[in-house]
Length: 175
Ligand code: HEM
Ligand code: HEM
Image (cartoon, rainbow, N blue to C red; front, top):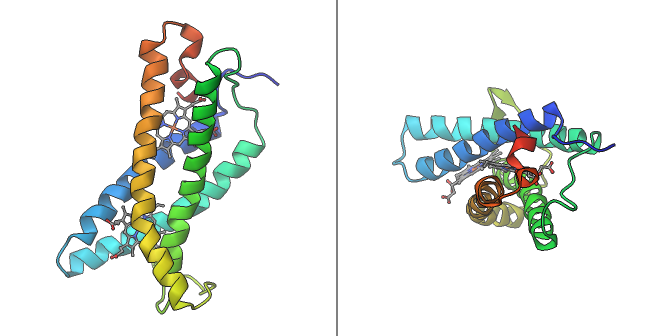
């Protein structure tokens, strides 16, 4: 079935997750630089809880993505533009999973994780190496996502305002 817009659940999830992810990056960066204090640990708790919520939203989004048709860019965008946007979208999906997962892993090794006050059963293998790999990756993954999002926004802006063809306005599909 041909469609001109993303389905409503996909549009809602896109904007809700975009806003939450950018906020989590900002809070993550800010909280790490704080001196040890009750406020810092409170932010850590909120960051972890919302981060795990994002993991759940990722699952919902993938299920919604698989069960609804999405607009096609064939014949609308150039071949290299389609290739680049598909690669960016796939990497963003991957990072939206890898980021909370690395956070979850590092926060469930040698300690309890509470999500909005509810203690999560420990399912992570208790390996110190796994914990330190997840810890090393978490920050760089977040800043890689930020870089990709800038590229992603540049694409949307180009197609809306620089391309002279109305059909190339991919932003309309997501609004
Ligand atoms: C889903 C999206 C998430 C994003 C975008 C995100 C982003 C970030 C960022 C940018 C930092 C600062 C990194 C640095 O400057 O080195 C950070 C730190 C941290 N994040 Fe996340 N995070 C997410 C999910 C999670 C989850 C699910 C958990 C745990 C359950 C978590 C636990 C932590 C912890 C404990 C730190 C501090 C690490 C330290 O003190 O060395 N994050 N996060
Ligand atoms: C953390 C922030 C963001 C993430 C992780 C993200 C992720 C994604 C992903 C994965 C897709 C592909 C959707 C699919 O095929 O299911 C997408 C589509 C789209 N996003 Fe974002 N996005 C973010 C922010 C933004 C922002 C700020 C804008 C506005 C300029 C934007 C505009 C769009 C548009 C127009 C599409 C449709 C592209 C097309 O169909 O070719 N996104 N986004």
